[in-house]
Amino acid sequence: MSSNPRANLIRILQHAYSGEVAAAFAYRGHWKSLKESPEKAQIKQIEAEEWDHRRRVGECLEKLGAGPRPVREKVFWTIGRTLGLTCHISGWFMPMYFAGRLESRNSVEYEDAATFAKDLDMHDCVEDLLDMARVELEHEVFFHKIVAGHRLLPIMRKIFGWS
Image 1: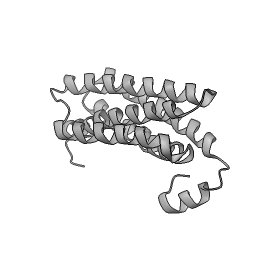
Image 2: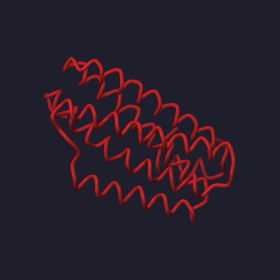
Image 3: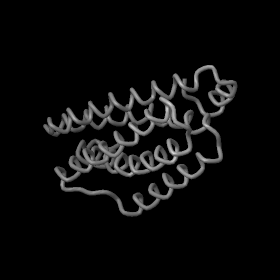
Image 4: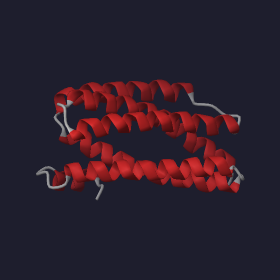
């Protein structure tokens, strides 16, 4: 990271903006692959929250006079759609595990972004970013509870991390 809070904030927000489209489409595929259940309803809600985060991140980018990176948008759109499709063949554990692992990193990135926004006196964005960090943490906790006790969890932790 550079010593320029504005540049750091823009970079994080651009990454988050594209990441949210990937997450939303992946969650859409994930909940569509599940039978009716409380988990399906929760993942559907998480998808809606990811779209809301994308909107709010976009608003912060606009306030900075910046926008998304078009190539990154296309790449992450493709990733999200592909992951959404693979949920129909991979079973439930892998999508749940990787969603939780990803959400844990998202909450930290939003907290970092809030710090940079505070340095820039962008108080409305600070509140939004901290709220999004909180919601991403709630997502992580949900997915962690779902995969807890699964027989593949110890192996996945050794290979990919996420405690």
